[in-house]
Image 1 (cartoon, rainbow, N blue to C red):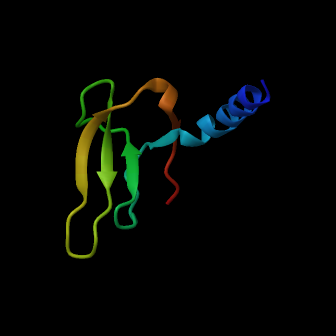
Image 2: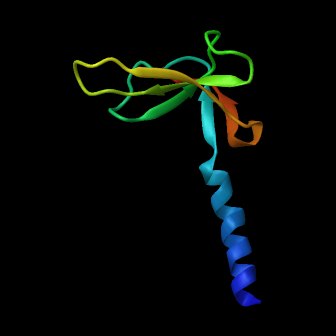
Length: 79
C-alpha cells in the first residue's frame, strides 16, 4: 500500500512538469535541437507549429503537430 501511495504522489508532482508552453510568437534565439511550440496561422485549427533549432548554417525545422489541450498552456514569448 505504501508503494502505491508513493507512486501516486510522485505522479501527481511529476505530471505538471511535463506540460509544454505554447508561445504566441517564434523566439529569435533557439539553441540547436531545442523545441518551441508556437501558435501559428499556417497550421490548421487544433494544431500548433513545432519549431526545432538548428546548428549554424542550417535552417530551423517547422512542422504542424496536434496538441492536446491538457498538455499545453498559453504564454507570451519574452524578447
